[in-house]
Image 1 (cartoon, rainbow, N blue to C red):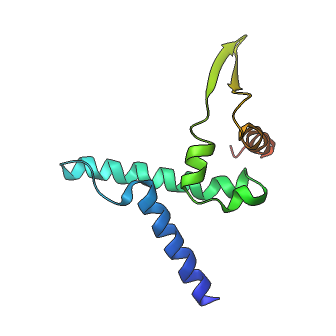
Image 2: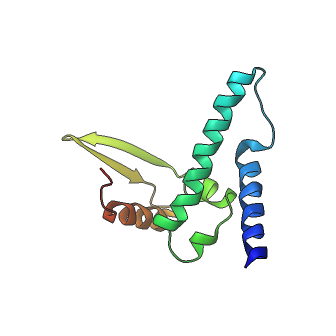
Length: 112
């Protein structure tokens, strides 16, 4: 059990490096602090999304796969009649994963 906890910590560190923690791209300390906050938000998104929204083998994806398969999908955000509609490309092979994830997130109770 203890070695698995260590492996999970190592996986999180590897995910952090893949998300933008490998180097600090800005020149000033305050700018790099903002960069670290952005990286932490991205890591939280990558940690919670598989638990709450994804199913099957998509829950086991490394950080690079959701970035290329889910977050870079071709889509249009259309506002009509006070509603926002996300129109995904029909030809994108991961559209089913995206719509299933959005449906699962819609079923979650409102925290507030």
